[in-house]
Image (tube, rainbow, N blue to C red; front, side):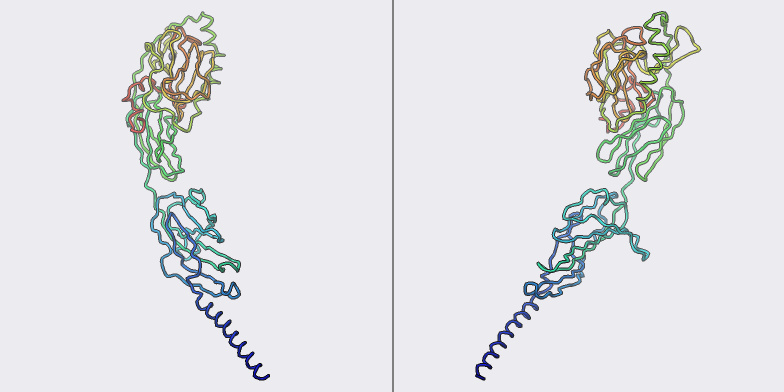
Length: 440
Ligand SMILES: [Zn+2]
């Protein structure tokens, strides 16, 4: 009996030693290498962890072994990674609670850096507005954690990475011409404008709107109206925090003078010339001066809209029936042509008006972008409607003599904002407007 009892004790002892031995063996052989290595990428560069705090399950989770370690290796020192502003591209692993903090460089004086959470998740967060960075030094801290026991263990893996976002080079301004005649157009080109920044121009010359040309280039056309006083004019240009100033000179253009003989007893003429006609004009046309399309529709040379003889040039100073005490500037050019002569779009644009007015007769207006518009008066027929996008050479209507007109002709006017500019100068490919590469 005693012998049997001893035998059982020996068997139990051997078994216990085996279980204990196995447990001890399993515990000892569970090593640091078994902690997970989630993949964290910034701007396409894979980061190595700076520290791993991890508890690895032993014997199916009966025990946990602390396999934490500090990594001495470089986690991420990306150096200067780009220009401001820059979209931060970050890729995070799935199956972890990812926490990302971005700190600016304000910790230099020992104060805590201003940090903000970057949206976590397994996806790429490319191009999000809230991670567009200004120039400076940043630290990105990423903690990938598992808080629940079971599975492959629990703990956290920390990554840290610093990088510098460099200063973007200043935009560059190109100017077509520094001395312009009344009626000319000044082209401005701004290149190297950071993404998301819309440049603005400030000048007494009139409406000057930058329209995007792609790849950080922006184009603007500033009017030198026919009645712009000669002298020097300042143009201030701003793009984000950057600004510059430039100066151009306006010189006199000798416009022709003309005495117009009008039969004021003709009832059609007197209606077209009545206070009601001018009231209607003021209600319909000047409000268009304030509008502009954000993109440039036109490109290349503006072609003549109708075949015919130029009967009155742009800017002609007009007197009526020999009354030299009153003069008015002719703000467009007149092309005399038989009724029914087709009128074509001189360049691409958007039709913003096509209707009959008392003074200007059948009237059509095209916005070519950035507030540059062409106006067509006295048409016998309108072949386009507001909202139509037209290409160079598209039929707009036909020449006529509707409204305040003494014979069939097209009154062709061009304005930037409210300032009348010369449409005939633009038939020449050497016109100041085309003096910058971008237009061709
Ligand atoms: Zn006219």
